[in-house]
Amino acid sequence: MGRNAGVLVVEHIAAALVENNQVAGTVRVFPEVGDSRDALLSMPADNIAAKIAELILSLDGGKSLSAVGVGFPGIIREGVVEESPNLQQIKGFHLREAVESALASSGARIAVRVYNDADAAAAGIAATRGVLHKLNRVWTLGNGVGFGRYPWSQGAWEGGHSVVTLDPKENFCGCGGRGHLEGILGYRAMRLRFLDLEPEEVFENAKQGDTRCLDFVSRCHRALAAATATSIHMEGPGPFYLTGPNVNWIDVGVLDRLVHDMVKMSPLQGSRFEVIPTNDDLGIIGAAVNAGRATAG
Image (cartoon, rainbow, N blue to C red; front, side):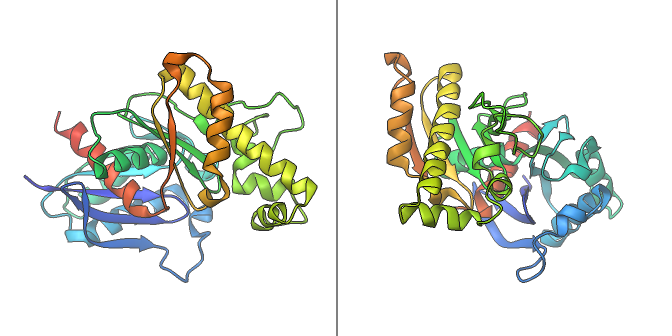
């Protein structure tokens, strides 16, 4: 039986072979460390697909690969990126078809499956913790806010765009919608809100007692708690994992208390939060696990 490969696309592209629910060998990354991290923002969709294929082929020449899973930000349906607010040039792009075609042109005929990047992270957490039989949900906090769940199922699952406030002035979300969680907790949204401060400075100033920054940090926690409570009311209780480059800004104790205040029906209580340090491995593993299961029938 051949191996699977996983690819994670966020601010960069990372790819690796995956065996026994672990990364096997070197993780290939584009752009390389030290290069511009904004390279994907201006890269045409076809070039992104070609670069994904190039990294896959660099792993093992594509030899012995049974399937490739790609975790990509946005709404994904049948391999098509229907919407990707933070990589807008790829909206409507047939990513699976383009990557398979690029691989085939180099003689590698490999089944490719594309998943939302947060769904890939959720699968990676489940796989590495041996809980592939349980419901797992994850919030990824970065330039945007991702929501992932495992087991994977068809659907939009854009939890980062949950409406958490009716304030018409809350219009900082990259998708253009008002009142969204990402419009409060997303890194891009914070920069638009605080034109005089970087997001890191906002949270540091809050620790020093700055009233404006304290109010915003409180709003961030209430917003994330509200979106989490909505998920619990829809799918029931369970573990919620927090990951991403900005996860250290969240106080899990505060978040837990807020959710407890929002979820009062006893059958729906009992959820817990856990912070997981951000890394590419979880998304790579999860994308490969989902693809392997999908292609195995």
